[in-house]
Length: 550
Image (tube, rainbow, N blue to C red; front, side, top):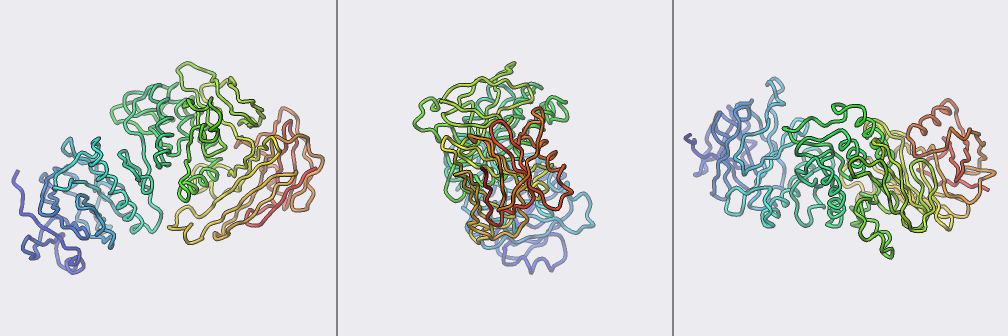
């Protein structure tokens, strides 16, 4: 098919060209302005060619080198679009990276969501696009000679070229949205964790690949890419209900948690696979949402200090040789251990608990000498354990993060052998740019010793309601006789043994708070076998507080 003459756009002429009639303009090789009935494209500091007509090609020019890519008819026949400028950051683009931003035209144009369906490209080319409200972003990559590269190539040079673009992606998204970008990539290179997350590629729906996902995630945290995950339930081939149930339970605790599979495989979202997978997903995702403030604080530490988010046990126990080869359980941060079932047909798992106190998700205390413990786990369950000596900030979960971040906070304290614990919470609006640099965040540190839990507000730069409703203190040597919050005595609430005291159950949290919601102010405490829980509405995390018991 014959190609029409090459056309170019100069970014400096965009505003002038927009005023003219027609749908697209360009500069030819002699620098003269030409008219086209197709669309305009522009790149700061680089030049590019215009879209041609239906069924033809997109010509992309970089330093006089041209390459053609065939697109589907629906792409090139959709309504005209207008130029959006991305600013000076374009000029920092590597010569082999071409970025194009296109925006929808008038609201009267039809089927705007279909502007960029899945394109038909040569087998060696990938176009990555995301819908950004009213805008679309397309990323294409070339080698330094202007020729197409395989974006899934194993070549270190090509991967470096590709990963360079993610700084560009992030800059573009910041410019467009004026909010934090989220970029996820299958290909990676050294240093990419600064700019984007990663998923482990097209793994298979097998028990082996589910097991391998754990060392993969741990390795990438060592590489400096903390936002990482694997396709829950696998990508290639068909999953099964038992496999997907176990994988949903595990995948809820991947730093980047996503169920994703190939179009040719059976659907594998929980609703399609039925009640077993639904139950497994619901239980584990409720736990994930419960620990989001802790997980968020870990990511902030990764951003500031380079800490890992998911980490192997030997990171925290370098003197314990028993931890060196463990790759079927892992930690989130220093204090939250994840213990999945990874073998077909298994209903129990033998997990290693390093020396110290641990509290499981049933509220039971484990005093380990550094030993393996057998845990029974039905098909819908996964084991988690909170490490002694740490205070974890938690939050009552909801159906999405926009709602859950408005809920009240809860706190899990597990004492160590010295009856002490420490923790911290970082909190900001979750969306603004440079919140840490600009001081627009809250940082609260917690300390527990000598039967006193206290807080210190290190930084208060984000004005947000941060009510602390429940505090669990596990691993005490004696049951408290009296409990006070900020000098106010709390009332003991008696419960029957089968009611239990388990802060780690999101359902139980909601039940206890529901009982007290009509009270103006309240402060109760509930004593259990290995600790106690304080339920109150008189603590704001934005002010120092203390809880004392005797």
